[in-house]
Image 1: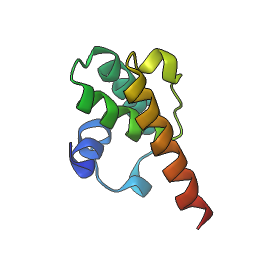
Image 2: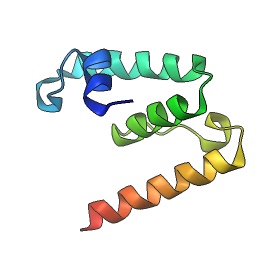
Image 3: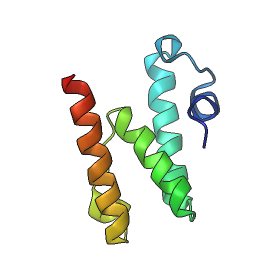
Image 4: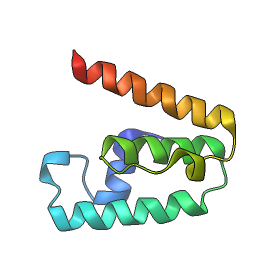
Length: 86
């Protein structure tokens, strides 16, 4: 999944600064629905990561059945936290 493609798909633009609050909320809701319907582990993780970066936190135990996926999500969260510290 390409980041810009996903931004355009859910928000109609690749410019995060141009997204109006209503469009952001609608796009996030659309992503959450797609996340719930997605069967491919990689695509699910990519959707989860984008939701996480947008400040939408999904419970890991509910989001991922597989322990390895939950561990990957925790690693991603740690990495993002370290990036914000720098």
